[in-house]
Image (tube, rainbow, N blue to C red; front, top):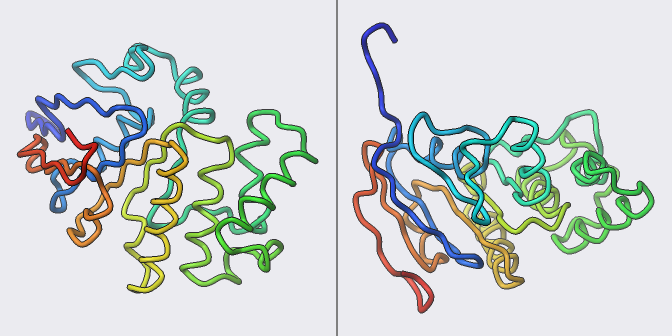
Length: 217
């Protein structure tokens, strides 16, 4: 803004092995959302490089980034980001439709995913007819629609009560156990016990890293 320049993320040097569960933590303004957007191919860096499957995504066009997001990355947001006009089933099927998945097969998979997160009894309910916990379960099912290699969870329990939040974290642990890389973005230090490694951010830089399990580095 004017002559003022804010470096939301700087001097970041981070490697995330396939199949790891990491937590990126820090206070508001630490740069967590920026890091998430960069990892999730929602933004590209002004400087530096980001490699996914040995490809530098910082040099790709938006159409290529969109394709990667659709096929490789699942997003779980604090605000759920479900389309209000669609049912739970339709919200979960939607990412598959963008990948030209056959509708019959896609709807069947959406049903299976909703059953997996305990929502088979709410298939045809719209978001306004669901509780916060139920909406987050639908959001998690949607994030798995295209069998992503990476699941990015941005404050996934931020709008939930303690019991429902625990259920959501249990689901993320199950996703991790199937082989997906799970990246949790949070300011809640109570959640980091689920991660194998914790990345502490402060003022846009990595302040420290901490092993939190046998696979962390």
